[in-house]
Image 1: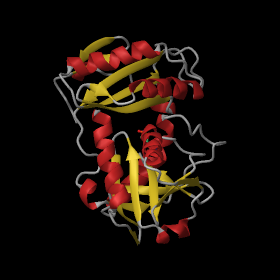
Image 2 (image 1 turned 90 degrees about the vertical axis):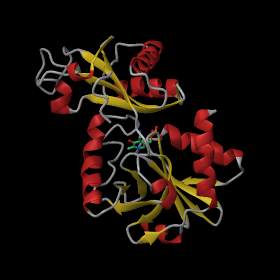
Image 3 (image 1 turned 180 degrees about the vertical axis):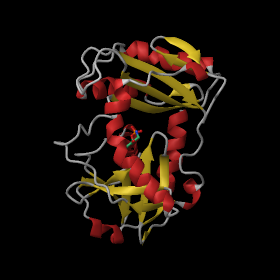
Length: 285
Ligand code: PMP
């Protein structure tokens, strides 16, 4: 992913990739006081760009962190960075975090809130899974209760359990892990939401303790347009056996078919293909 000769936007100006550094005593590094966005640009246009910027600001507020940039300024920063790197098709990473300063304890009221934007070319998140279907492990870590963590925020701290789950999955030859939630219901993958198909109808977990992804919302709209019934509800683990198709949604993942979760197998069926292909068209429309 490293565009080593490129530029990164930091706190209002473009710096060389190698100079985009922070101090060791950056609050975010010790206490995960950071929120971020993952976005994709297609042919020079970021898909649902403003929604991502709005979510970034909302994520910051959920962590009592006011980002000192407006939506329009964040929009401009993203496009300025893409342009500086000569990218038309790009992954866009926006990060806002509490910097280094006077506070080195848990409280961080006096440290500056900083923001950075990096862009790079990023192909298929799950490699060749788009054709064959990704193989998922079942994570031992559970999505926490909304009383434990601000689940609507794309907050760095929430990714600790994701990285641990993904490493365990990769060690078993899987490309990701599916996580249950604190109650035992099916939740999502470590960086993508999940959908299932049974007898021509779609079932997807209720996002009441994990991120209601922008791609998830887009795909729900696409299914509604096609008059395909979507059941948004709590899904029990023992229901996995009865589902015929499965796919993941996320900005990086786009719409990726799933072929296997633990011992359960799924076909890359017609609804999965239709949604995956239509999403590719939509983002470039
Ligand atoms: N869940 C998690 C944990 C994620 O990291 C992501 C990726 N941002 C998603 C879901 C999907 O969100 P989106 O469609 O907005 O990219």
